[in-house]
Image (cartoon, rainbow, N blue to C red):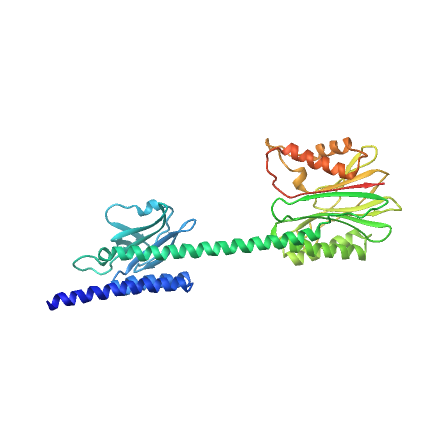
Length: 406
């Protein structure tokens, strides 16, 4: 009788412990304990009180990784797929110190897909039923609670990261909308029309037109490598430096470019670069002085339909601490000449056959629309690219600026 009471007390004590262990892990989950802390609670619950010392837990979060290895000599092997766990009969795991034997492999499933596998065994040789088998239901329950909690932690971190990215993109998009002009002042000597469409929420293209004085007007188009908030900050800083540089010495393009290259190199620290086309138009002389720093060459079409690509310049800004070589160009413009600046997302857009739009198609549109308002020319070019690409998605930002000189 006394023996039966003793056994009953032991069973009640064991059940009480199991409930306490579940409560301890659950409390850790509610207290947002770290992955390391939860795994340690799990290990202690099984090893220190139930005598289950040999534990290896693998979980899947894009690839299989080992979260816990206890009572194992050496390092456990990497696992490529769940077929590794589908061993028949005795279960062995080959560590760097030899083969380790386990009593059971416990899967944790969600919608019939494995989230994790626990390999459990007893390190102590003894008689009677293995503690792993004896407490199998409890081990399964505790493992499920742990793995689901860790999975939820990872999902929560992913959601937080996605929300941070969304806010970052919103901020970058706001910054970018402030950089790119949407309206142009009326000018007696020129008309301007422009179009910009980012490939994603935030692009890396930029254009600008501003007066230095009554005689000189600056035109600029640029493309920063990369996207997101970092690119938006770099371009914002570049715009401020570009405007300041041209206000200081608008006729010395070599000095302007070298100064801008220094600023981009300092701010980007070699991680990004900017391709730039910049030009100064002198109204009285009807002269366009320009420099092309690694950008797609803009196109000048004269009133008679002749075209010229503006290629002279240097490498992109920020590629080198010091620009190895630089050359500026000058173009004399007659009345009704047209300047077309663009980024690679326009001319390099491919159709379904993999053929790029190219410069020839652009020139054909310009000749067909010669003398028409710049807004009509801009619309015709964008519509032509859209029709050309068909169902093929855009691969990059698209920026276009058309200027007519009267």
